[in-house]
Length: 289
Length: 289
Image 1 (cartoon, chains in turn purple, brown):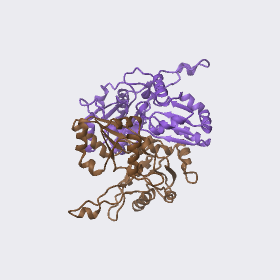
Image 2 (cartoon, rainbow over the protein chains, first blue to last red):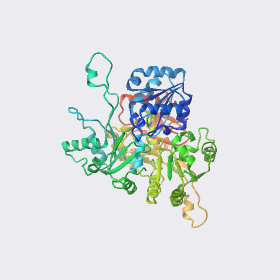
Image 3 (cartoon, rainbow over the protein chains, first blue to last red):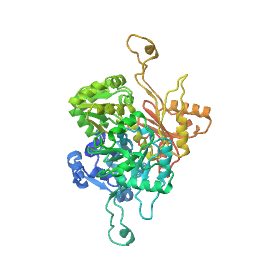
Image 4 (cartoon, rainbow over the protein chains, first blue to last red):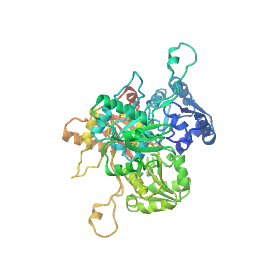
C-alpha cells in the first residue's frame, strides 16, 4: 500500500491523526522536498533548517527514519519507491494536500498502473487556506502561476486570465514561483562532474507585484492597476502567518519576510468579504486570523 | 481565545494534531451541526448516528463534553459563545476547513469586533479534496451551487457560470444542496408552539444531473449535454469514498449511496488529467484513490 499523506501548511503538528497512523504503520517513509518544503523547513526565527525539521519529525512524532525525496528521486526512482509499496506499506509525505501539484498525480498514475493500492490522506493546501482572508472560495476564477522573469524570458499568459477573472468580478489566486534544486547553468553545460544546483529561490509578494505591473504597463488594457486591491500572504497556515490587504502600490512596500508567499487579486466583494478584508488592511494588520 | 478548528472530511481521525491540542486545552467545545455534518455523522454502514459520533469524539479523543451548535445557536447565540472566549479558551469545530462556508467568516468578523483573539486551524475541504480525481485544481473556474428545485422555484443562474467555464476549457465544481434543520412550512405559518423541522435532505448526484439537464433543455445553448464528461463524488475524504467518472447520462444510473455528494463538470483535459480520470471511469471504478 502506498499512502500519500498531506502534511498541511504549518509544521509537524499539522498532520492529521489518520496521517500519523499511516506513517506509524509504514515500513518506509519518504518526504517530498521539491514543491514547497521551504515553508515547512523554515521556522519563524529563520534558524531551524530542513535537517532539524526532519529530526523533529523522526524522533518526536514518527519514531522512524525518513528519506528525503527530491525532484530527481521522485522522477527517476519512482518505480523503486512503488516496488517497495507492492510488498509493504510505504508513506509518501507531501506538504499541503497531495493534489496541489501535478507530480503527485503522476505518482498515483504510475502506482495504479503497477497495481499498487493507493490511499490518500488529505490536508489543507494553499488552495483552500487562502479562505482565511475572508474572500469566499467559490468566488475565485482560474488560478494563475507567476514565474520568475529573466532577461530573456518574460511570459505573460497570466494576464488574460486575470483580466477575464476581473471582468467577471472574480478573485484570482496567484501562485508564486519556487525554484528548488534547479541545476545551475554551468552544471548543465558541462559534460562531466557532479551536478551543481542553484540556491533555492522563492518569489516575494513585491516581486510578483512588480512583474504584474510591468506586464500591465506593456499591455495597457487595464486588467488591473497599482490601485487594485490585493491580499498578500506569507507562511500561510503557520503560527506566524502574515496576511495583509491593500492596493498593489501599498503591498509593494510591505516586508512579508520568510517564504512562502502568495497573492490574491481581489475581484468584486460582498459586504461580509469586505468586513473581513478590513481586518487585514494596512495599519490594522499583522494579526493572525 | 476562540479556536476555529477544521475537522477535515472523513471522521474523528481527520483532525490535525494542532487541532486536537487546541481542543484539549479549551474549556468549552462547540461543534457546528448545520453545514455539512451529514458526512461526518453517517458512517459507511449507515448505522452510526450523530449522537454516537459525538460520544466517540468526546470519550475517545477529546475527553470533554461537546455542545452541538446548530444553525439557530450560531446565528442567535454567537455572542454568548464569543463572550466565553474573552475569558477562556473556546474551541469551535467545523467540518472541512473553517472557510468553506460564509457563516464561519461571519463568526470571525463578530469575534474580531468584540476584540476576541481568533486562531484558525486549517484542514482539507471539498474545495481541495476534489483534486483526488486528477483534475488540476488550478484549472477550475468559478464554483457553482445547485439548489433543490421546487414546483415554483427553479433558479438557474448556475447555467451561465458553467457555460463560461466550459467555453474557457475550465472544470466546474458543483456544490449540491444540503437542507439541515429547515423549519417546516407548517411551523413557519403557526404563531405558537414548538418549531417543527423538515427531515434533513441532501442532493444526490443523479438529482443534480437531472436538474442540470432540465435547465439545458430549457435554455438550449449547449453549455453541456448528456454526453458531457463529469465526475461524481460521494463521501469525499472518508474511507468509503466513491469517485466515478462518466458522461452525465452514465452517472445518472450510478447509485452513489450515502451523502455527501458533489459533482464536477469536466472542461478540457491535459494528458495526465486524462490518465487519472481513466481510473475512475465506469467499469473500472469503485476503487479508492
